[in-house]
Image (cartoon, rainbow, N blue to C red; front, top):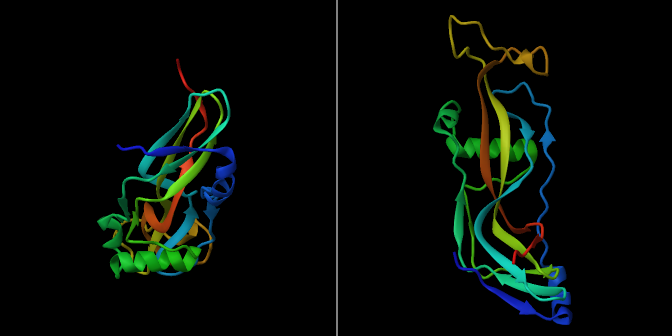
Length: 197
């Protein structure tokens, strides 16, 4: 993997350091589901960065220094929903996407490309190194598929009232956990590590 970085002076870096901001992970968001057929999501996990490139800034000197890392590789991150999940609800991926966006207000992408040429500025203490990752932010969702029809005739039904809301006569067809790509791209840096001699 190619790594490109440039050492820059402290004064020259002041403006660019403020411009390069890593996107912080959002907190998980539980959700009160509704008594409605189709996809019902009840939990959104914190977002995670799917790496498409990484670079290292190493400060082998005796003073604090600032480095600018430039992304040299592009990469694509795709949403891959299990066919066993999408086969149970009409509309395929488009319905899954619409359900996430309608229930959480989050945009979902079939695929997102993280392109080369983006830069990130990082300040590194003496005798330390920092790894910087670049890529696409993803989100993981947990949910259920609800239906008016018992998916397992002759077996005890899994009715929705095992979860709130009560008094809902829909059947649980399946429960699932799926990870989706978002349109968001970003950087994430590691904690500084001492350079071993």
